[in-house]
Image (tube, rainbow, N blue to C red; front, side, top):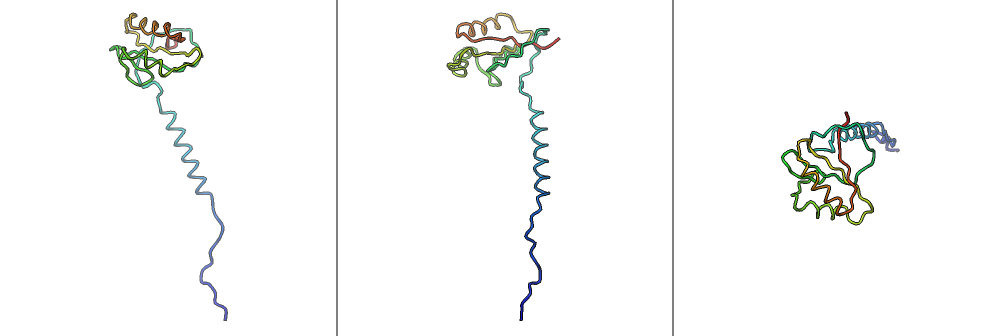
Amino acid sequence: MAIKRGSKVDPSFSSSSMSDMVFLLLVFLLVATTLINPNAIKLTLPKSSNQLTEKPYTTVSITADLHYYVETDPVPFSDLESVLQSKLGSMEEPTISLHCDKTVPIDEVVKVMNIAKDNRYRLILATSPN
């Protein structure tokens, strides 16, 4: 007498639910990356019609209340040169983008320009388009 199994196991695999999950994950990551703001420091930049397309290696920002930032990290002015030297290392002709609020006194801008000149960094003053 042959014993028959009551239910049969289907060995096939349906990947439609997995492709749905991958599609939803892709949409989520695309939306999440477009919401990330690379310039988290709010500055009112001066306006200019000349725009450069050169990609700087790092950014230095000066806010209206004279706080200094390297990228998004706050740095006291006394440590700015050493932080830039450690960040840029021995790169050939590193480029720094200087983002200053338009109310910052020119003396503060010149201080950063002098640091760049002393260390032979290229400096780009960031502006907003007209």
